[in-house]
Image 1 (cartoon, rainbow, N blue to C red):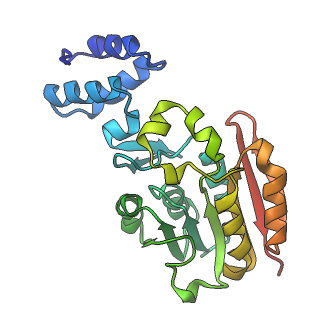
Image 2 (image 1 turned 180 degrees about the horizontal axis):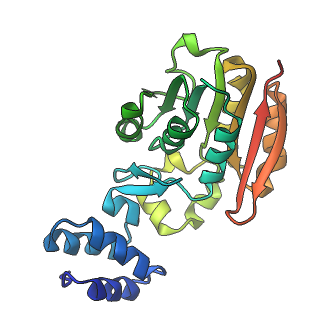
Image 3 (image 1 turned 60 degrees about the horizontal axis):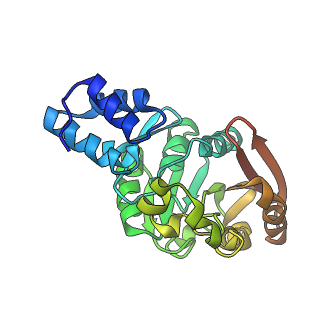
Amino acid sequence: MSVPASHPAVVSALRTAGCVFAEEEADILVSTARTPDELTAMVARRVEGQPLEHVVGWAEFCGLRITLEPGVFVPRRRTEFLARQAVALAPPGAVVLDLCCGSGAVAAVLAGHAEPAELHAADLDPVAVRCARRNVSPLGGHVHEGDLYAPLPTALRGRVDILAANGPYVPTDDVALLPPEARDHERRMALDGGADGLDIMRRVAAEAADWLAPGGHLFVETSERQAAEAVAAVIGGGLAARVVTDDDLYATVVIGTKGR
């Protein structure tokens, strides 16, 4: 397609494609593109259905600009609630771990607001790991590639004060019902949480107590309908558990705490 390099033309193209927030998206596209040709290419990708964040190469998250690559999970607005809960409970000089880190958005927020003494993140997807390193390494963090706790240095065991794990929690049968932007453009491993959506969360909870320091906290995002089973999994892993919610963001977070 060919789109004139003007804000009104971009808005028109986005509206025609069904973009609900055409004005806001046009602002982002026009301000990000460096040339008229680049703007035309970006609008074409967005009109084809690619997520805006993949098109421009970044997502806004808790006031930070998080670098993204195509295919990498786009940090959701509701996950800002998890990040803020983790920041609020981080002690001075915390040891922080972000599992299933994706782009490293939560780790980046913790690096900027919790002033951790040590920051680690991990993901199974090599593309996400590469992306997270761009966001987290400049902040002094270390990003590891592998399955949950497997790639972590053994010296972390029993020392983690804040463990954030925003893993996939969409039930397998519901993945097909997701918006096309997610279903078609984000890796399935970042979305599919197994039959009831809690497979990864259960694995995180089962080992969390081994990695947490006394008094340390685990933060997992889930849905309202999954909260009771998520709490049971966290308690089964040896932690006290409570649920916090934000109705405006439709956010549900289970916080597990290791005894002192």
